Length: 453
Image 1: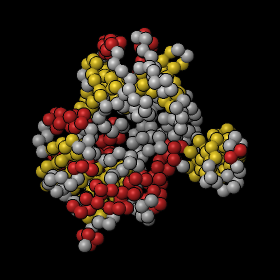
Image 2 (image 1 turned 90 degrees about the vertical axis):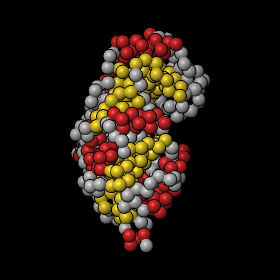
Image 3 (image 1 turned 30 degrees about the vertical axis):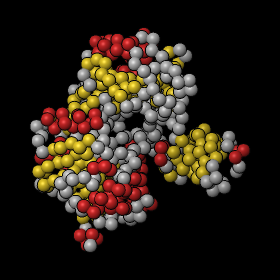
Image 4 (image 1 turned 60 degrees about the horizontal axis):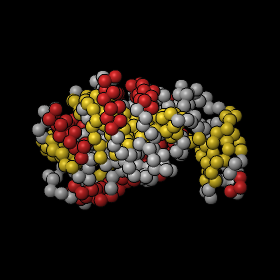
């Protein structure tokens, strides 16, 4: 097959599930063929949309022989929107896929066979679970709309509801475009660089039902302040409205400066009996129904008491707060200054006096003069942990490392390196993100004195 065949339609058998909800088949010439929205075991007709030397991508034209696990999606936007991967697959099959992804990543990337992998813990609900959403602005005709981009595209799919977001966010998706029209606010155009509205970030609290609304804009405009006051007046559960300035021609969503326009810049949520302030930009787990179980799993790996613990990539200090009753001192490290401000408030809110926040990148703190830990808990972003951090940790030799991961591939890479000094005792997958191609896991590693010598 040559590059001239990129619009060709082929019938293929889907062998297994790949990432991003793409079924994997093979073209007659042996190339791996990724087909959007196709499921394992299906015979499908697909159009080749991209052809490379070693692989190809395609769009699903027709399911000739469906999988018994294929279901009708309840989301009207699923076949266009890129927000979900698995609205068309039975949830039990999605869980098997995620558990196997972790196992295969450990084998393929980490060279770890027969890992101590426990059964995946399902979410209590696969719908309406997210407490945070970021939605780009666009136009329908001359009217501003909100939505999400198509998969691998900057084509906006207009949304007036979302099946995995808190229902209050769906209400905002309907309300905000009308308000933007009323106040004559224009939408940013990537090509011309003109327009004001880029994204809107929404956060909700499961505990209080309060909401924060953050407009990402290219410049300040007095109409935004009036809109903010109007929004809070009409909808009392909107506790705060702010703007984030991002004037650059970039794909990055948030800029560096955030300003409150009306109300207060925080909402409060509860996890395992503790209260936490969350601001516009701070990291906070997005599934409030499942987060307690995630952190309980991590806390079970703590000894009964530890003199010194570190919480790396600490966010708003959630884990540090929960660890504090089990430790003499907890040192939480977080680069985001707003998150660390929230952490200080959260320690005070919960009467915690033995937790300390350090505002700096983990890479810059790891060799500082902090007291040596017996336990290190780390919850890094998807890119995983910097090699320098892992190397220094192995030199320091804490007795336990509790690694909370949201990316099986970088987890496998990191624990493979740590295995020079540490043994993997358990890996517990937890589904924090139903219907998407993401899975969380909690890993306990303990120091092996024989390896260290």
